[in-house]
Image (cartoon, rainbow, N blue to C red; front, side, top):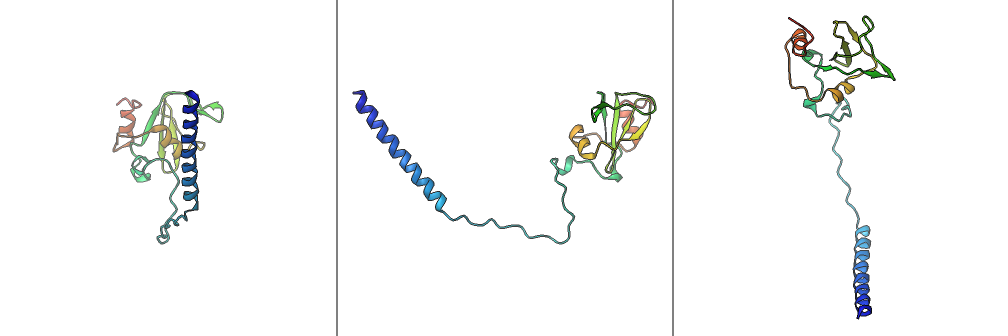
Length: 148
């Protein structure tokens, strides 16, 4: 009884396998149509390959007020904890961008350009920025780095 059932299952399995192999052979034999390529549009600047959508990218130099973030943790660059060159503070930073430059401001109001960071790092680290400020001081006040 069990031998007859097993032989029948093997025959059914072999038939399904043969049909599958035929389907694959027919599929590989089909000639694929070429995908039409878009035509180049004039002399446009190449688009930067970036993972963020346009509405989350850092705006231009004209819209820079309010494009800042607070970083309370220490920042490790090239294997070293980054410290303020004037006062030695190493945490509670305000990080902001000006065009392609990233600037850092410590809690004692010392500002310095950080050439090891770029706007791509800023975009990855800051996430979506929903607050916009009309002045730099208003942004600092919003982030708790300006008392008045």
